[in-house]
Length: 244
Image 1 (cartoon, rainbow, N blue to C red):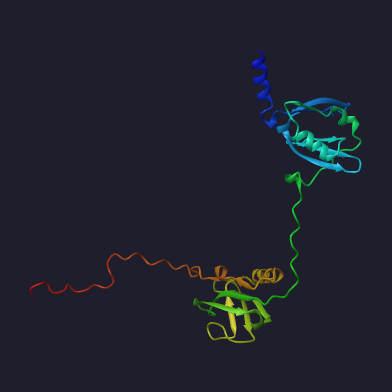
Image 2 (image 1 turned 90 degrees about the vertical axis):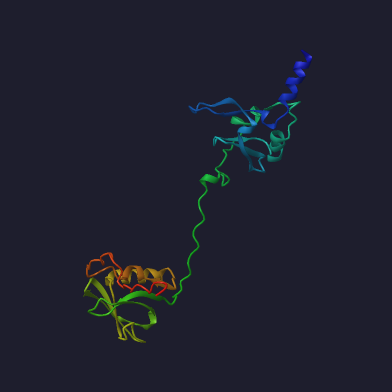
């Protein structure tokens, strides 16, 4: 019988999770407090609430918070450094519930409820913009990639036109020429959409605006793809046979 009791006592004090904590907690119906017991492994963290008043707190993994009328260092020692062989139960009923005049405030250490840091404000800066499009030769279906600086454009000349493939944008260059050696550049994109992308790029401080995917040729004349070849286009003569 004595050996069985010693074995039970040894097993009871073997792990830190075996500490039972008693505390007074608010009743669900709001009518006063009730005694509650929980194991130490249910605790999420301890915290100091009011150092001058000697009030600390226990936060459970369930989200429940229990103010304790005890300095933080004392509470920490009793919870985590108790000799379970001598004191397997930590009774906090006299320093919780009605004994604590303060409530436990929400803490930033409740990590899932903290607010994200505000995004870093972008400085106001006019970044020179380089623009890439596939320009179309006026009244033709010839396309060439063209990259130009915004400073090269006469922005008063930017206008929307009805191109061969629908709505297009036409602009005049103050400096240099387009891919077809002309001052005017035409690309298949409505003027309103082009100006929207341009203004957004300027607002975001971008250095490049790539519109090639928007303005590349997409079979605008609806021509049929070439039929697969049944025979080779280039037919060679048979070479001389060995021995001839």
